[in-house]
Length: 373
Ligand SMILES: Cc1ncc(COP(=O)(O)O)c(C=O)c1O
Image (cartoon, rainbow, N blue to C red; front, top):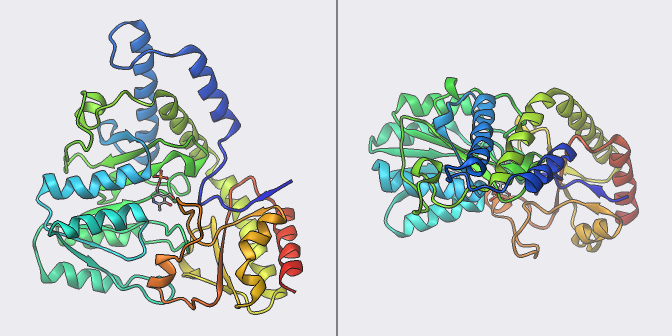
């Protein structure tokens, strides 16, 4: 049996979600925009899903829009906030996901001012630097900072950042792709203007996500077309994906505590054994504020550690070197570069779901011992 420790790249779909999608595929085929019975049936599935997402996140129904995933949601927020809300400056960080980094590079190329906070060697951001930047310049500003870093697992204090943004009248977008369904969230209480989510990170289907747009900050569509998603995204809705997303989110919230307990047990067991039984292993990132599903470690340089991910794969263990890369080729990580990590050391990101076990962690330690010694 293979061991899947790469749940930050994607999670397997839950059996209930899979079954639900299959049932809908067999029985529902209407276009949600059609006014006849088949259309109304599909429409009601989409709207029920929107209600489920809104309820779990403390948002109103009108603030949730379905998209094709985290990448589209991030692109839409950043580009359309500049286009439609008169944003003159974006403050972000070099640790963001490529969908944010590359959107910002494009906007910068078109003349927008983009400021990037300077993380320390653990990837921690200095919120005073944010405060100072906001205090110095009162042009309309959007702050975009991810809740959980997908490579090193650092967890941002959303409440603290949202308060700083509110104090200075800045809008706040957070890429919450890695954290949705992992923590309770009440958007009604947070001064967040936008968040992004993606179903495949919480045991839902791939190619579907959502964006939360606070009703005070109305942006226009990125995809022009029909009036779907209340004129916010032309294109016939991904009815099956949306239904799967909503069920996966509901299950993530209903089982949050038990899933978290299981994941924490596995992470802490693996961390402890790696640190005590293997030579010179380091935990990367900010251990004091670390997301519970991600354990990022580095190994000392050696010929064997160079090939570590491949050797783990051969032994039946799926882990990753940082983020899952779209080309399938291991590339340098912009996150590790930004925190000036020792590039000779070999980074491995283990990321967990509730399906992982202590026995799997034990087996990974034994395999690593075999590979490295
Ligand atoms: C932090 C973060 N943001 C955005 C994305 C992109 O999400 P999607 O794969 O749904 O486009 C990912 C996925 O790897 C991610 O980890």
